[in-house]
Each structure stands twice: as C-alpha cells, then as structure tokens.
Amino acid sequence: MAEAHGSNKPNPIMASLFLLAVTVAALIVANSGWADLYKSILATPIAFGSGFLALDWIVKDWIKNALMAIFFVLIGLEIKAEFKEGALSDPHRAVLPFVGAAGGMALPAAVYLFITAGAAAYFAGWAIPAATDIAFAVGVVGLLGQKRVPAELKAFLLAVAVIDDLGAILIIAMFYTAGLDVGMLAASALCCLALLAINLRGVTRLWPYLVVGFVLWFVLGKSGVNPTLAGVITAIAVPLKATDGSSPLYRFADKLQWPVVMGIMPLFAFANAGVSLAGVDLARLMHPVTMGIAFGLLIGKPVGITLFVWLAVRLGAARLPRGCTWMQIIGVGFIAGIGFTMSLFIGALAFGDGPIQDQVRLGVLSGSLMATICGAIVLSIAAKTRASAEAARQSPA
Image 1 (cartoon, rainbow, N blue to C red):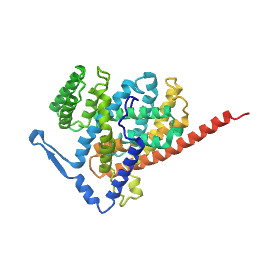
Image 2 (cartoon, rainbow, N blue to C red):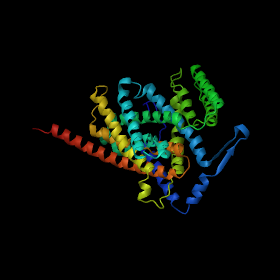
Image 3 (cartoon, one colour):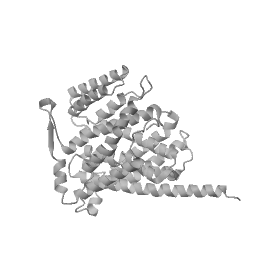
Image 4 (cartoon, rainbow, N blue to C red):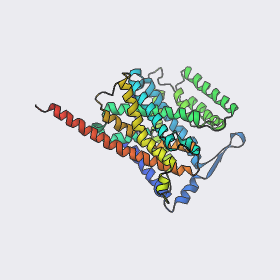
C-alpha cells in the first residue's frame, strides 16, 4: 500500500509466521483424534433472522461469506490506495506490473486447464492457481531481507500482487456466481448508487459507508453473486482524502489491519487448510486438480510473469525495475506463486464442500510451499551472483 499508510500494520514477518503456524495447527487437528470435532464445529448451522431476512449458514460458510467480506474491504482499500497514489498511480511505472500480473494469471490457468483437460467436472478450478497471497508473499520477502529482495524488486512484487488481487476479484464476480435474482441485483445496484452519492457529497465519516455496505453485502448474497464483493465495492467508495487533509481510507485500513491479518485470515486458514493426510498416496497426489493447482502455482506463475515481463521489455513498452536482474524477476515470480488464502477461497467457490476440496487443499499447500522454497533459492543465488559481480568490478585490474 502507499507509503502514507501503515502506522497500524502488524509486522509482516510475524503475521506470515502466525498464518503458517495456524495452517500447521489445522493440518495437525485434521489428522488427530480431534478431526471429527473439527469437522463438526465447522459444519454447525447458525441462523439469524427469519423469513426473507433469514441467513442460515454453517460456521464455515459464515467465515467464507461474512468474515472474508471484511478481508475484501481491506483488499479494496489497498487497491484504491495503490491506484490513487501508490506504485500504480504512475502509468509508466504501472505497465510492467500490469503485464507481469497478466502473465502470472494467464499461464497458471493455462497449466491447470492443460493438466485437467478431458475432465470437464474439474474446469471450474481454473482460477485457483492464478491467485497470489499478498500477506504470505510480503512475509517471505521480509524473511529474505533487503539484500536478496531490494526495494525496487519488492515494489514490483507488491504491485503485481495487488493487480493479481484485482484480477481475482473480477474473476469471482464474473465466473463464480450462482443463479441470479434480478430483483436482488437491482437492489444491489441501488446500494452501489447510494455509496457513490455518499462519496460525491464528500462524506468522510465511515459509518454511512458501513451501513450501506452491510445492506449491499446482504442483497448481493441473496442475488446469487458472491457477497464478499460488497467489501471491495464499499472500500472503493471510501474517499482517500478529506478537506482537512486527513484520509478516511487510510484511517479505515488502519482499523482493519490487525483484525484482518491476525484474526480473519488465520481463522479462514484454520477452517480451510485442514486436509486429512490419511491414505494420501501417489494416486491422490497425481489427481488432476492437485497437479493442476500445484504446477500452476509452481511453474505457471514464474514462467508467466517472467515471459510477459521479457516481452514488455523486449518490445520497449517497459523497463526492468532499477538495479534488478532477470534472475531476480524469476525469483519473485516464484514468490508470487504463493497462492494460499486467495487460492483456497477461490477453490471453496469453485468446488463447494465436496470431496474435491481435499485435492484443492493438497494442491494449494504443496504448490505454495514449493514455490516459496524455489523463490528463496533463486533470490539467494541472484543476490550472491550480483554481489560477486560487483566485487569483481570494484577489484583492481
């Protein structure tokens, strides 16, 4: 996010390690004597309201549809900030990450579709490996340090991840919807117009946006469109600047950082990463969905990003980030292959709670882990190679 923001951000390394610990905890619980209790709690129905106003979901769906809507509010705020005054506000600087993100979404989807070719029932998962988990990616970059990931390279990765999230949001809106209710869609449109009117009137208090955003979340859910999109729409309506120079957008984002990063994301991970490893054999690991996701993240991401960036540079449309090498671009391409939260979320939308979910989780977890390891290795080698080259240039002839 733009530099003006961040006063209340959790340490990205601490946040990533906590998310990793929760993921490991979910795997342990799902493969222990508590597995049945774990599944039972997640499948517990919780109902609010009655009649038309009734919402009757199981615990896991409340996490996916309600809490993740708050997660998408933060994502929407970050996207707007980047486009308004961050790395994506300069069209010349934005070309390279836009191109890289396009390749980083297209190639993983192509890899997935190639591996699952001939099995139409699995095609719905094509977008799962196209996503990048910003929180994990930032945490890994932080662990690698400034020497391995210099500032310009980190900025490129973050811009790619933000655009990637925007692409994922558009994909969810266009491809992962149920049967549509025209009346509820009309009500959703009215809510969007109300948010626009509040913004145009220069309202800087947050509560009017939250009230209309809540109504939008409800009617979107009733319309058949994924209700989490209400979070993004609400966030985009929040103004960046007030007349007194303060920023409602950054103020709102700061309030959300800790509950989202240290609460909602770990809770979602705990509810969705718990895959049983009992009976995991070569056949399960070689399942088309698992292979498609894993290789989409591990191969599709770095190849797509690097190839599209190379084409942009070759055609003169953009230049590499200052001081960066091609090996470093490949390295951050691998890091962008950490799909995790967004990939699991899209997987839940694509296949529901059916038996394919275990294959989705195996693919996301294995692909993200291998991408992390490969990215760390490549970036470490790139840093050593660059340091050796600099030392050779500085040494006397």
